[in-house]
Length: 170
Image (cartoon, rainbow, N blue to C red; front, side):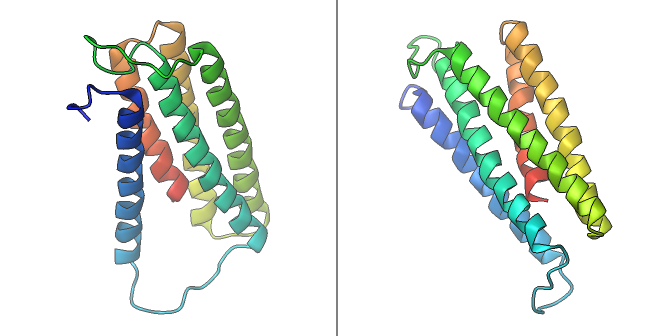
């Protein structure tokens, strides 16, 4: 990544690959806490499983759009040799925010569906955790957008992206 002058496409791929590694690590962690080798037991309605799948897909879209926003803005790479995607950062930011709002709406639907369908407490708790982490991440995103993208907030937003991703996988 550094040898390629921090080109935004390479930086984006690096970050997204890191998120894939987080997903695999989290899966190993969860499976490692299972109490033996037994068949999978489905504990939620099939509709909730579809909503959860849609949340993961939408979460990936949010993360990809987030890297496009970064690659279009002032923190897109090497300070000496700035390369950007060439997209209007304001428009891409709005698209990213719009998809995040759909993600939040789907998270609310999942959480409400889990609560009303009698799903295990863990499912409802996971939905609530995802709502809280996503709202905190949104606050950071809006704060960085309206304060000129200070580096500490950008870094905090990247950490938040990882936490939202882990919460989505929960």
